[in-house]
Image 1 (cartoon, protein in one colour):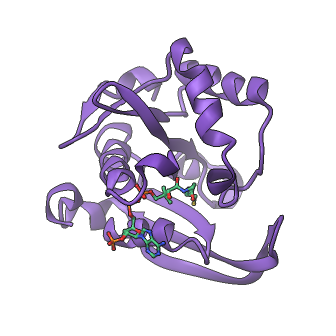
Image 2 (cartoon, rainbow, N blue to C red):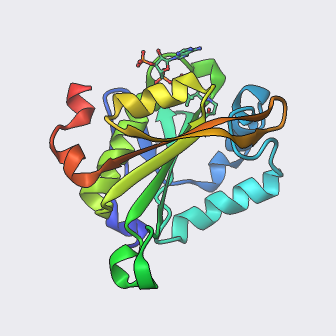
Length: 195
Ligand SMILES: CC(C)(COP(=O)(O)OP(=O)(O)OC[C@H]1O[C@@H](n2cnc3c(N)ncnc32)[C@H](O)[C@@H]1OP(=O)(O)O)[C@@H](O)C(=O)NCCC(=O)NCCS
């Protein structure tokens, strides 16, 4: 699979999802390095050059389907979707590139209006219907209620509650959650229209 296997842009009820463009760089750095954003991510503040390099790579990386989220022409966040190997004996082909790791960020100025949930639902559909993975997973700090509520609204199951398994720069050791959903479970219901 390559990123060209996904049909872009994707339109949801209110949003447009599309691959990264060079013109997005400053805005993505500005969103990413706000305390209300980095507080909940696995890296706190990131070096702008590093962040932009990651986005540039996403455009050509066949396993990275991350997308920028636009609302009426304004970039308000992004959804990450990276295809990874699953667990597997002998590292045979069966277990390679079969899982997609989902993540999302919305500029706090646009939070609380359901935009992350709307964009994430579309990306789970991309993962299952176009990329063709068999599982989508996502993780968060247990205290990040908006994040795990989104996962649950997508039909994802809490598969791990890691007790004090996650280091937080301000809080110390805190609990983490991991969620997952299988392709067949997704197909049992179209979560974009019925969630
Ligand atoms: C987490 C984040 C993506 C949520 O974005 P959002 O657009 O505000 O999310 P939504 O509006 O779709 O709301 C998500 C859910 O959280 C709930 N919620 C929002 N704020 C909440 C709060 N303070 N306490 C409890 N629930 C809250 C909403 O009600 C909604 O749940 P519901 O659909 O069951 O009612 C956004 O806050 C963000 O980018 N945070 C920083 C980065 C981050 O945490 N990314 C995820 C890392 S795992």
